[in-house]
Length: 428
Image (spheres, rainbow, N blue to C red):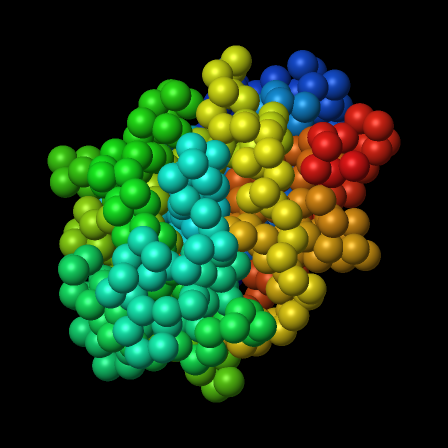
């Protein structure tokens, strides 16, 4: 791509020889153990390379598992230093499979499972009003909004009040006060409106009220440590911040009406989002709906555990019925009033569909979550795969979309549906 086009598209520099910016975990790739042909791995990787060549993602990580075995574990590009506006002398740090990346909204899938684990432990009933656990939330007509409605984006509080200073995001007491004082758009749960960040704060308050512990400690005790994760924390410790991948605004600048949708969903324009997400105060904070950090492999490990019915390496993380409840569809396919697109949700997950859905063709039994549009983390029980594609660019619309779509299509095509008799109970 020539320099003029690169500037117009806010793209990073892409070398002709991609092997110079590729990192492969050779020991971590075992396609033969899953009965996967090397041509399948090569086909998927070529799609990742094609996405990287668009220049909208300075760094990409990929982890794919099939039949419980990781068949693809690689990274390409840079964790920092090769953004659209970085100078030639900006130090470049290579992206590896061990580089932590913020999952953004894919964090919601993990936070949601924590809530379902509370149900398993007898501490929460998702059909209870939030105000049953946190009475102050009942103010201004929100008394009947349930925990389940918050999880399924039907709580009627999709955004924090307009004109709220951005630094409120890491002031938990202040953001909670604002949410309690706010008035819901509707309280009967009939309309889907994606809760980009608000729902996480509500779920956090409920969890901390019933456990007497912090959400980060609960995550650590019930997920991170039992699954032997290195990262997988809300935010990053100050002394580790230098290892976190940098986020970049890339692609054409969104125009109306796309810019309006972005502001509605994220509470600011995309340039503001870049600034905020690279702010150490955001990176060190606990934001349950939007700043869990880790690697593609760790998120893939999480979804593999769910495919296993709550088991990981012989350890029981949660019960199978908990997984089934977490992925059970709630409501029909509807136009989401925040994102203005058709969506299917469970209580915490974005679901696939037939004949085509978010997670590809014939993806009725797929579940997962998107993070800031381009991060794709999901599992498909009917194909026995878990996939985590992480990246560092924030392109909203642009020339990368065909490559991103082809990646999802290729995954679904390369792993045919299993016979119903071989699928987990929740995918039969």
